[in-house]
Length: 486
Image 1 (cartoon, one colour):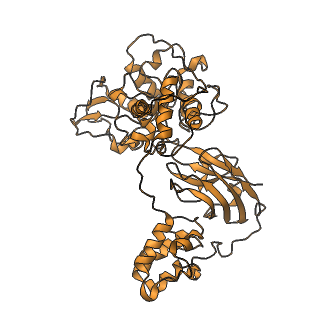
Image 2: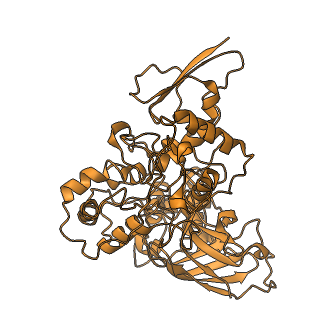
Image 3: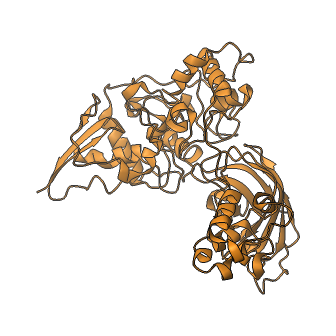
């Protein structure tokens, strides 16, 4: 017989179990990529742990069977049958994004460390007479609203073991026989956003919005940095009040995005003004980002000197690099891109500078040249089609052209560079969550992209799998901007 003690500061829970067949608490959850459920969308990761806002996305990092640290006053769970349901509550849903039920909903309020989430507590959810303002008939339908609209995953069925485990877990947490229904108040932001108290907004942010955006709005794997971004007050207020799926079958008045909205029942207008004042005036000391050209020039200086030095003509390395195609992927060894040149100027040039330094030069040395694959035809009906990128978030713009059966050329690309992990995705019928990446991570805030050109290789995919591209936020599953080929 073996016994284990699982203490989870993340959830404020303690679990204890014994027996030859006990589940290993560090091994499962019934989830793995990202997602969440509940009765109302809300905020995001964890409180005082917003220094580690990724806790809900890394199951291996949240369990410590050998820990004996005291984790607070929340109820103890001693029934091992509750384990799976607790994991469903605390971890992202397989096939979804990085959100979990825990992201937006505490089990009980006030929550540990005083963190306020966008959604209401759900410890008594199974005992409520109705859900989602009466807009759904069952608790499963309420959960599926979160699973599909906020966690970007497929709806659960009545027989889904995740649903059954979650229901049993929440029902075991109930403290009343019959709970009052929850009223969710979706409202527009006030027209006058002035008069907020930045200091109060900063403190409130770190006890609410930090669940996703991290302490001091420095960003996490759930949501991007906000501090120092100079966002407008109206934009910030609109995102807070009405972010969510437009045309939602459950909620009216949402305006797009995966960020959970904050209703007036969770955040007052005065509190909203305080947060807006702090976010829009906050500054953060962020070191200048290391750009691809910084890497390229550093490698050229380190590995290509003397007889192998690269001739920059009348300019310098940075000037030369600014004219390169910023497309390609890390590790590319061919193609007329900065990524190809970086590859050859790295370890290959360190070992054989005479061979590889020329490949890092402006003419590519016969290797870092036109990325068109040998023999790649141009006979597909989509060759020559053009997609105009339409902005949804973060200033996306540009034109994408199918140049041959293997390649998409993006010109005049615009993007503020902010996000978590943002890549160019290709897909059919706008279904980018089932699409595939054709770029590396584009995040490089605050430098961003201004009229940049990129050559994107379809790799093992074909144009039959493409009728549009998206600047896709991978962890959350939302398009910052996209366009269809015509």
